[in-house]
Image (cartoon, rainbow, N blue to C red; front, top):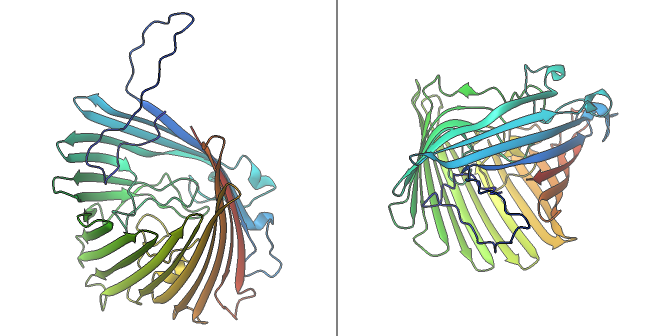
Length: 408
């Protein structure tokens, strides 16, 4: 089954590649069946996370009070030409703790309900439902859908949790200009990808008092190995909001460099918020390494509209609350291919005035591999973080996260 959804916003057409398979003569001739045109796919997920309690000296890993889990099932159906070139796509998600909250965990990774844990252990929601149409080099997508961070850095679908958050939006993609992709969007509503009970994924709220948020992105690849991306968001509010963001990535063989930066401008702020980031990396066969830096001022937080993450190169597993505002952060990463998968080690340090201690440290060790003919992805991660909170009973936290995804 094809796993690819219609939208690949950097592609110039809406054609899905395919291959030829040599026919096999059946023992008994079967009657011909006309293809429906629908592609069906999905995934099954199991997800577990535990941490020792931040403010409790007696808290420890694997304690029920400090653990969360979910089992999820996602079903997807896509038809690129239902009638007259109009396509459709649907996706539904279901979550359940499988009654683990009775003895093993005390929270959910994602929830569906009114915020009370007992009402959020089992449920589902419609995560995608959209129409598509292509006309020349322009494609349209209308309805509930995912948005990618590469082209929508402040309203994107986050993949760290059980399932991604989505947006109610109108999306237009044009590739008439050589080596250039233009993306226009009106984002009318969104759910929120957060941790635990209290984040209802079935709750899609209107943005900006039903006025929505407008986005325009231009991405150019005219220069070999160089990708330039610029994005502008506009929200018509009492204090008109504008966000400008730019990103430049250059791949030079085994080495790569990247720069990013932008500003949040609104009369609601005394001064415009400004952020900057840089990254340099290298990739040598089974090894890779990178060094990233980001700087944000104290005027506003640079964060995703539909979740908790940032568009910054210094984003780690858990450091989003410490890098998006009033922070100078450096992150070093090393990766290696081993034991049939990928090990990644990262260390981050933030100088942040928002903390009494003035510093935050995080260490990440993760492993990811694919098994069962690449149909299943397995992940295991350990995180240590320390915010130097001397007034807390515990200034550090350890976290373990494991999950598995079977794609069908």
